[in-house]
Length: 446
Ligand code: DOR
Image 1 (tube, rainbow, N blue to C red):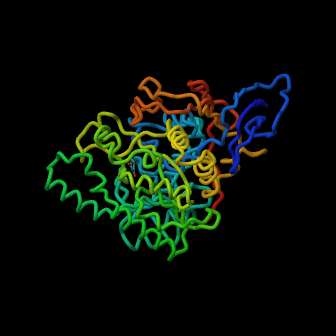
Image 2: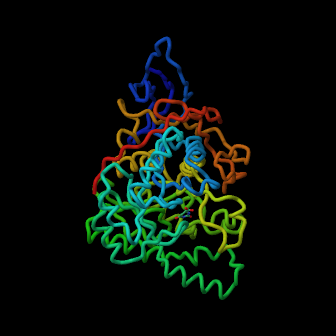
Image 3: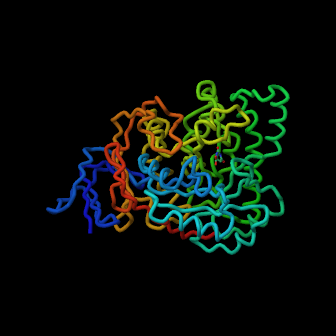
C-alpha cells in the first residue's frame, strides 16, 4: 500500500491548531503525532509549517452533468474543485434530464464512476408531483432532497402548497431548500421592465430578488419544518433579516440548519458596477450590511455550513443583458482562498473555516469517515500556504467555462497540495491527473 508522510504541518482540526505530522497508508490516515519518523520507502511531503486541514466538503454545487456539459461536467469541475481544496462535493439535480427519480439518480452515480477527482454525492430533486419517489428513497441513496422553493436555473419550482406539505412530512433524509418567493420576484421583475424595458441595470438585481422575497420563503420553509419535524437545511442565505429564523445552538442540537456561500460572504452590491452579470446569482448578492450580518451569524453559530453554489455558465451566456444572462458563478477553485482572506482580515477564524466548511457538512449529512483529520478515517486533506499570495489569471483557471469573478484578484493564500483518498491530486499548481474520487456514504436519516 502507498505510504505518504506529511511533516511539519500546522494542523487545524476540531477547534484547535497544533504542530503535527500525519501518516497516510493507502486511502486512510494511519497516524497523527507531533513527530513521526519516516520509514525508508515512505514518500514525504514537508509542509514547511503550512496549514493542514481536512478537505472542504461542498454541500452545494452545480457540475451540469448530464445535459448541460457545455458549461461544465463532473470531470472538469471536480478537478477544479480539488485545485481549490474541495475534496468532496454534493451536486444539485437541476440538470437535463432532471434528477427527480431514483432511476435518474442511479444513472448519475453510474456516470460519475472513475471520472471524479473528488468524492461525490447527489441530491434527488423534489417536484410538485414526485412524492412517491421521495418516499421510496433509502438512506444513503442521495445526500439529500432539494426543493427549489423559489424558481432559479432549470425550471424546478415547487410551489404547490399541498405538495410542499407532503415533502416536508415525508422526506426520509435531509431536505435542502432554495428559498426565494417567486411571485414577489415576478412582480418586481414586471415593475423593473416597466421602468427600464430590457435594459435593467444589474444594480437592480437585489431589489428584484429582494430581501422580502427571501424572508417570505425561508420563513415558510422553517414553519413547515417545525410543523412536520423535518430535517431542514436552508441553502445560500443572503440577508440579515433572515438570521433571526436560525438558532445559535450547536448543529448537534438543531433540526433546522443554515448555509451561506462564499460569494455572499465576499461581494456586496457595490460590485455590480464593475462585475455586472458575472456576479448575477440567485439569491442575489445584497447590501454591505447584509454581508456583515452573514459574517456575524456565521460567528454566532446561526449559520452552520459554508458552501459554494458553484454554478458555471459560459462567458457568452453571461455577456447578455439582465434578464437573459443566467444566474450563477464558478467558485470551487477559489472558495477556500476567499475564506482565508476573510480570516486574514480578522472577520472569521481559521478554526471556524474548518468547522463550517469541513466538519459541519460531514456531521449534518452523516458523511461516513470524512470531514475530520482522524486516525482510521479517509485521507482527504489540504495543505494551505497562508503566506503565499496567489493571483487569479485566465491561464490558471480550471473550470470548463474558463472565467472567474476573481480574475485579476490576488488572494493572500495558496492551495499547495490536495490529497483525496490518500492520493495526491493537486500539488504546486498542477493537477496530478489521479482520479481517486469515490461515492460518498451518507448515514443520516430524518
Ligand atoms: O445562481 C444560481 N445558479 N442559483 C441557483 O439556485 C441555481 C444556480 C444554477 O444552477 O445556475
